[in-house]
Image (cartoon, rainbow, N blue to C red):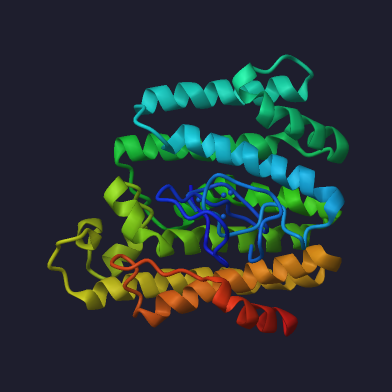
Length: 317
């Protein structure tokens, strides 16, 4: 699972896995990865804020609990040397622990630090449990698809993955913010899916060597290239590969632009955080364009130096 990069935050590591969504979501960029500094310490490099100073203080514990829930599931799915069956068994146990926490039953000691604050947030804010189960389903799908060498047939199938991996976090955050009308939920889904897709296209140079393939087959066929053409050392021509990434980035930009009016439905500091999330994702697309869409060869980032531009663009949304 992946998360797009906004302003670079505190702890860069080789195992970058930010959250993807309106303010946070799981992924390798929740992975599901806003554009301000974190208020809470985290052990991994992050692109988007988990509990930034822009987030209203009463909501920060819930946002941090959501982050740690997704972060831990992502580590189960992706860290270490475990095989796919072991990872899926662990994720099934993690899912059972989620059910236990939300029904007042004992949680395994190793995950109490995750589920105690998460259960407290659920009791306080009445989060729909199914959205949290969807996040675990996305991690399970990643494990299965990587093990089997599955290739996404088209953009629609890829968006189905985003529906599990990214969109639930946006909906959970909207729930915290008291925004629940249907147009707002649809806009949130578009922003979250766009962030997830942006992270995919930003991280091609990292994901492909690990056999994480998100390039949709129909777009590859349209430009006469194959997944193998994006691996290091191939002699494929740049132009069709650039055309693939350019098309995928244009699609992600369109989704983000369709979702962007949501910023006018979220009030106060949370609304400003959302503006920066949107602008952070768009800035990553700008950066990919600035290297002629050759993101399979070079990974772009957005750092603190971009913050003045992001703030200016956020002001005029």
